[in-house]
Amino acid sequence: MRIENATLADGRVVDVRVEDGTVEAVGDLDPVADEETVDAEENLLLPGAIDVHVHFREPGFEHKETWETGARSAAAGGVTTVADQPNTDPTTTDGAGFDAKAERAAKSCIDYGINGGVTADWDPDSLLDRPLFALGEVFLADSTGDMGIEADLFSEAAERAGEAGVPVTVHAEDADLFDESAIEGDLGGVGRDADADAWSAYRTAEAEAAAVERAVRVGGETGAQIHVAHTSTPEGVDAARDGGATCEATPHHLFLSRDDLAELGTYGRMNPPLRSEERRESMFERLADGRIDMVATDHAPHTREEKEQSLLDAPSGVPGVETMVPLLLGAVVAGDLTAERVRDVVAATPAEVFDLPRKGRVEAGADADLALYDLDAAREIRGADLHSKCDWTPFEGHTGVFPEWTMLRGEFVWDGDEFGEVAGENVRD
Ligand SMILES: NC(=O)N[C@@H](CC(=O)O)C(=O)O
Ligand SMILES: [Zn+2]
Ligand SMILES: [Zn+2]
Image (cartoon, rainbow, N blue to C red):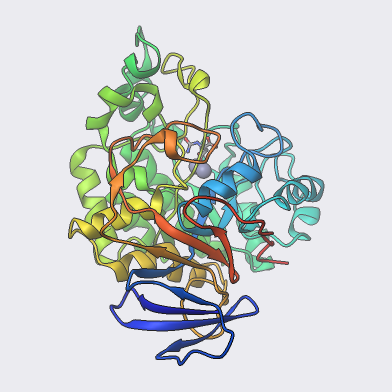
């Protein structure tokens, strides 16, 4: 197959030859007889995005999401590789838990990695015996699934991961620094009528910075490669960088702030929580200038029924895998970000940090994981248009550029209208 007239993130207009699922050549390529041609019409061709932080909920919470629906949602958003988190049922904390998840993940239409988690009763021997994407997210405080662990166990886990050469991704919040007074008394209202700003006051910015500092210290002591998940504050990003760790930021911490909570209510409750508009702007600055290594969604779907409760009863988490690249390209259209930066934060850098040599670039020798975007076709994001089981989005009404098509290893997994019969693979197998 020859994709002709594609504009790459760096502005070059090229042809791309794909053979046996691999990019064979990039440049000015003459057609070969009988070769299938795909006209890119000078639209933007990006490497398929790698989202290193999703919760596809299976096994155990199929009413929220499945590997089938989560992967389709990803593909329709230009994402061709995801890494799934361990707070499922059973938890992915031993060999059997990994195997149960691997069996479900085989239904994915995009490539994937499976993370192993840490709890008091984890079994590191059997877990580290499996082809893990990373150890994590390791919960330094409770979040959905209540998998928060004590300091000693974190050190022990980092030591094991360091020995095994497996990166450690950390949910960095220190519950000792939460402000309990913020959620005492009558919070009133359910769903969109709840006062969700209290959640941001409760899970403080200081709690994140302190936990990141501890995580990078333990990384230094044990030799483990530390990656900080969903950093929500500039202080957290800076602490990760200063400590030699990498970090990711979510679309919600880059495009939403506490100012949005009056409208979102419990639909905007997540961990770590939304921060002030000032902190959001500082996060966006760090995204644009390269201090944030990558964007990952923390796609954490919950049903409307679950969210339509009081602030303390509604679960934490928002969906996002389908809207990540669209939102970032919306920022490109607005002139706030370059296309090269988007390519790096959603593809090139995650591939580098998590050692995926065939992923994340449009270059000869790489997997032909590709997505094409027409920057003139930006449109309003609507929850009803998305393909997750979660039929709502916190980004309702924001502007996004969705892919014209998405390809996994040379096969169309999404043609802008329908999904192809494509089989994803474990990137560590
Ligand atoms: N981010 C969230 O608020 N929730 C996540 C768990 C997590 O990533 O902490 C979930 O699984 O629902
Ligand atoms: Zn988390
Ligand atoms: Zn998460």
